[in-house]
Image: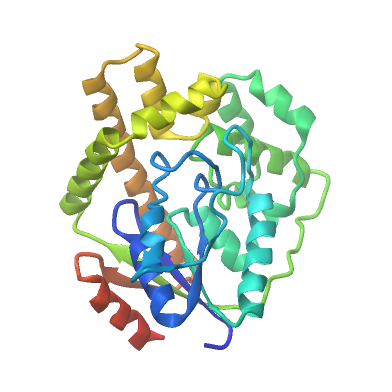
Length: 303
């Protein structure tokens, strides 16, 4: 389909990976991940890789940008963009259909338009300085970032706040970089579900993962030498399971905190997608409660 890039997105727990893999099987495609945590090895359950979905009718679907970094490493959006472009060009050279799949709005926008901030280099000295600051001190620095830059940044976590400050400091003395984009024509499909059904899926999936190895996954990461602080960096599941393993919370509180946190995360994802629409992106919304075959037919008709 010429230079079309099919994008499958939506909030957590709506079945993005399964749909993308099935679509890749049908269209002779390969899947590119747009997830900020699935790049890490040995962090499978907590990041929701669902690798079993990449085997369709006995065929292994080729995927990219998953398991490319060691657990404990830091992986930033500028490196993601470089890795994404390399993987996309490889897929195009093999005459396969690229399918971008993930729920990280920032990663999707970076893949589609280059995100000039991604080219801004890391400032190790500044990062060391920011590590010493409490969150309220970081937020005071955020207030100094010009509003036209700030509105383009994702500062939803402490990690992203620090990166935002780094970008703001760089742009005080430099022009914003211009990124060369590969030739693509993106078509974006976003899965959505009734809010109450999303809540139920989030809870059911959380319990299933806790009962099927997620706690043991975190134990293994701690045993491998990763510090509790390092694991907390990787998000909700690793933060609260680590706290549970350290005896800081009991199991019911861990489950409650995770359930609430993941629901809030899903809400933030939807807010980001609506913001993308306001920016001019065309999102084709699909009812995720429909069977996969029906969804694939709707996608193919739209294409």
